[in-house]
Length: 109
Image (cartoon, rainbow, N blue to C red; front, side, top):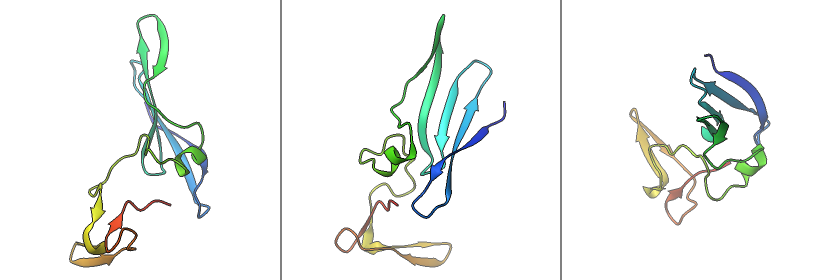
């Protein structure tokens, strides 16, 4: 089946945040939002039972904006501090905000 994309809200810059729903032929359904690639829901069918959501997630974007537990978050290549608030990628050096002493820690909008 093809993914279904619906508007879930807008981020702090006014950009749209989408809910992408993926479903397979066995009835397993995953919902991912484009805000941090967060897994919002995962529905698993049971024998003779309606599908049950087996992950913790929020009903609206404000839950994710205010979340301190990072529910459903997809963790990128750096899941902690970026030393000295800078990194190199493809021969370019990027400088980040020093929000943890002289280091950078988990940028969130």
